[in-house]
Image (cartoon, rainbow, N blue to C red; front, side, top):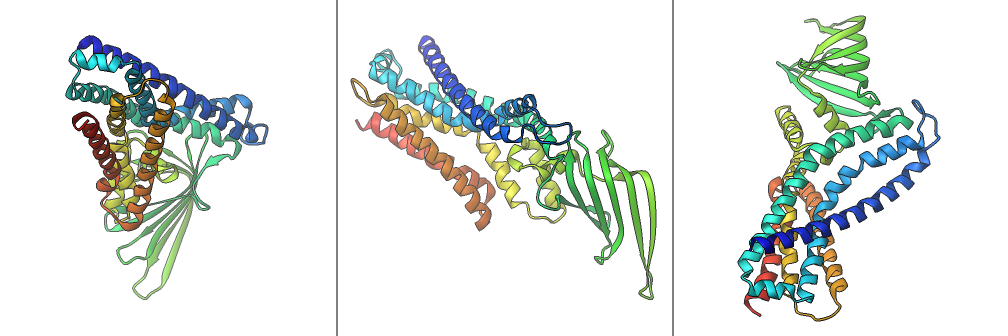
Amino acid sequence: MITLRRFIYREVALSVGFVTLAFLALFFFFDLVDELRWVGRSGSGGYQLSQALLYVTLSLPQHLYELLPITVLIGTIFVMARLAQSSEFTIMRTSGLGPGRALGTLLLLGAGFVMLTFAIGDYIAPASERAAQLVGVRHIGQLSTGATGAWLKERHGTHSRAINVRGIDTQGQMRGIRIFEFDEAGRVVASLQAQQADFLPGIAAWQLRQVQSSQFEHGSDGALRVQRSIEPELQWPTEISSSMVSAAVLKPDKMPTIELFRYIQHLQANGQAAQRYEIEFWRKVFYPLSCLVMVVLSLPFAYLHFRSGGIAGYVFGGVMAGISFFLLNNLFGFAGNLQNWSPWLTAAAPGLIYSALSLAAFGWLVLRR
């Protein structure tokens, strides 16, 4: 039985690896063609072909994270269908590989792909994506979102703060910072404007540079007094970390799971809507588990009976099933955000539906036929 498992694991690993490399090469080509339009344009230090190649290369781990479940499906379907066509799987069944053992073997293999997908999505892809963004923004000077940049909110004692960051430059420094502080009555009591800010490691503070500050005093007679000052540098205490600013500037699906969870806690603690980020958090939790759904979905192909040809058709059918899974996954994400559905159920529903369908197909092919 160990020999059979090793044989199946080797065949599936080779097939999945080949399909993954083919897809990555395709995405690399398309991304490079798209990035070539920026080559030669003026910017901070210019944007050369070498930088475009580096940007596209650094974007590959994110593509790998997104592609792994579907490449696992294609590769496993191809192996299962080929074993069925050559009657090798029939020989395995007569050697003791029953339905339960076959399912357990593929689930164990799927667990390995789950851990690989999680490691890429939580460690490799976020780091490479941040590096790719810093390389890619050289032709526009800074990374920002929207016309006014990113807005964040924070409570400070009885006061609340609204922080605006226009963008992040190629050195990872914040640019165009505006800070407004409000008292418990909702009146502005202070404002800060800084051209640049750095995150201070190990300290809950930002180092602001070229700071213009204004202090507003509301008198009992209703008069408003303003005190203005200009400072070259100012250490401003805050609990907002670099990952929170990155979350506000970058897309949430490109963040590590733990940082996304901390950002959700920050939003909830400050009374801000976190539905979108909660759905994305649970999607990142359940997304690696979709590899298990894919291997279960491929198992019924091993019990199909045909003598010649037909593998391409079955693989195509499996690909369509995988694409429909990801379409349903995205559809549930948007619908859950609009309809305010439970975040974890919104993220888990597509996997549960397809797991039930694949197990039903497996049971019908094995037990009923």
